[in-house]
Image (cartoon, rainbow, N blue to C red; front, top):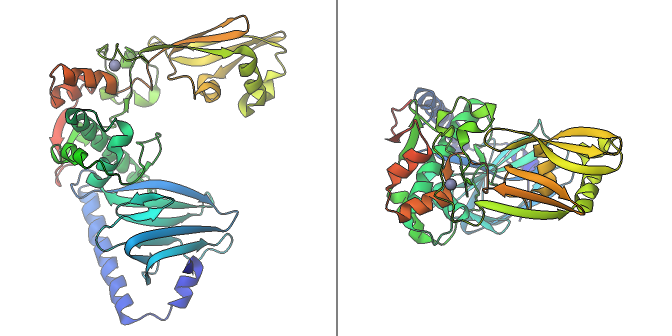
Amino acid sequence: MTYIIHSIPIRLRNKLPFYSNLKSYKFFTTLILTAIFFITPSVSPATTIRVLINVIKTNQPKTLSLQCREKITLTDCDADKIISKSCEISLPSTKIICTHLQAATENNTPITFKDQHYAGSLHIHFDKKNSCYLVVNHLDLDDYLYAILPNELYQSWPIEMHKIQAVASRSYVLACARDARKKKQLYDVRSSNHSQVYRGTHEHKHLWAAIDQTRGMVLTHEGKPILAMFDACCGGICPALIERPEIADKPYLNRMRTCHFCANYNLYSWQKTFKFSAIEKALNHFAPTQKFIADIGKLQSICAEHIDQAGVVHTIKLTGSKGTRSMPEKDFFEIVRHKIKSHTYTVQRNGAELNFSGSGFGHHLGLCQRGARELVKRGWKTKSILAFYYPHTKMARMDTNAK
Ligand SMILES: [Zn+2]
């Protein structure tokens, strides 16, 4: 079956009384829910998480294919409904009438989209500002947390470790949701590692124990869920010494105590060698550098220029036969990111080679997963481990009256 979004309101414009009643009902429900949202803005046990799972540019007509074991109810922005078991949704490229389409099932049966299975509902929004469609999965907080666990940790790791991750991830996503809703964004988090890696449902049922045993538990600072960042291995770096102005107001990410519990992990410290000519070639073809790379002549050396007290590199110096230039490390990192594991390294040319020597895997903030795993082995409890990695926080249970 094929549905054209902009044809739905036209085809069903002559509404039945059911739809009018439904719209009135939806209006008052929305009014009440909005009032509740402003009274209890951030911490609610019934929180629905909105995950951006796909972005579709409008320069070409696209077809979205949805499948489900049960019937999918498609609802357009006028609350008109079409019910089908599987459907093709054609997204028009030019004339947009409908700006929001929702696909859901009665029993929370996963809907398949692009070979992934999603609990909850799928919402397709037209983003006028960026001229694209956003496919956003709305789902229950617990379903979301269960879904991300095997993407962020090995599913075979001890359940204690998954409990730690569940509390951190719950706090993180609630902090993101609070921020996104203040800004009136159409989604709370992305499905990539920009947020937490989310690929829909999975079959590792034993991980429900981690969700069940930590249900409602969040880390808070000043009564609000914290942005509980985490990485694979901190490499022994002291987070409080990292120059990151955007976390200056988050004391729980400015830990003074260093973690060396991850020291046995092979990426605690690492070396990587590149061919100097390969990096030179990449710089010549990379948009942020190709404008100036010709001006400095034949490239002779690459070194870390500004390194903060923690060891994180912020700028890189390129020296050529005709001069030198600085570039932001985050741009340089784009060239080497698939082989370099963190922004904390030294770099040196040795003849035809460029040698990196670095620490850790990730951004070094918050929970160090390898370190936490070692602490679990040593018998530390969930609360003590989280208190170590997130100082200045309190463990709380989600409460509808929390502010
Ligand atoms: Zn560590």
